[in-house]
Image 1 (spheres, one colour):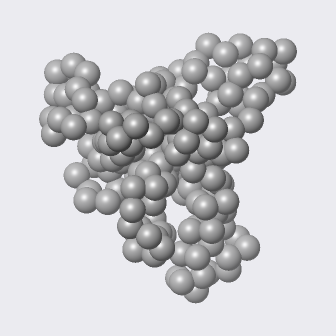
Image 2 (cartoon, rainbow, N blue to C red):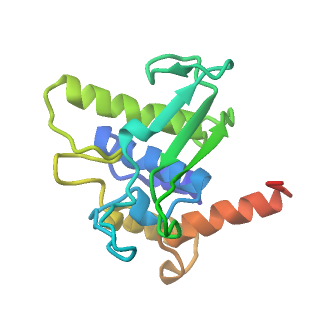
Length: 187
């Protein structure tokens, strides 16, 4: 379904590319929609006001030696995402997750991170004002969850699947199922 989503994107501009990169990251990092797409809301459930949306500064590319590299450099072999907090993190201790290159042209977490970070750098270089989040498209707005949902549902329908059975949760569940099918053991 991910490749169908790539194929069916309505536009091929930087905002659409940013959305695509974030979708790939959501799949590999098993992200909740609130961790990448807006509207960004504050979580007050722990008594501390915080947002769970991933900040651009917390997406780090590394080379073969573990040295941090910029998104414009081709030597990136892994990407780390620092989750300052997440819905299940009651004490806000945060966590860091790393993934390596997949060598798939369209389904690679490193390529997706580079794409998102390069678009952000391009926009900033032209004077565009952005918020702190990886998917920021202005100072107050990120890629919207509804944009991602629409693409997922369009892809499902194009594949003959019921639109109502698919949404952003499908990326998280799909990523988890892919790990299970690959016989992944985190221990």
